[in-house]
Image (cartoon, rainbow, N blue to C red; front, top):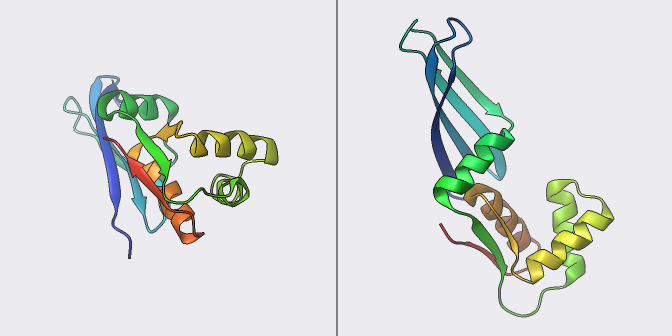
Length: 139
């Protein structure tokens, strides 16, 4: 079984119950080959508490993860990987159409593909399963 990979952030946002500022703790995790976003919201003013598990990562929290933790790069290592093999994995994992998969495969092969640690580890694992030597490197 693959190890779980996580990246966490803390932020403040308005409470849905009383409007006061509440604390938000969010975690993007790679668990069993799937990305998930879990959030815990706590309001000190009214005592409300909400936990949301398995949601989609909001774009502003992704930007915060990247700003706080830095980007992780996806690197293809070893013998030259086939662009077709990389495209096949990208299409399967990310649901990309052919044009986007081709463009992203070029980025991957040129070492220019990066994202959050869980995102890049997911792609690296999928590439390794398909026979392409790949690593997620960086913060």
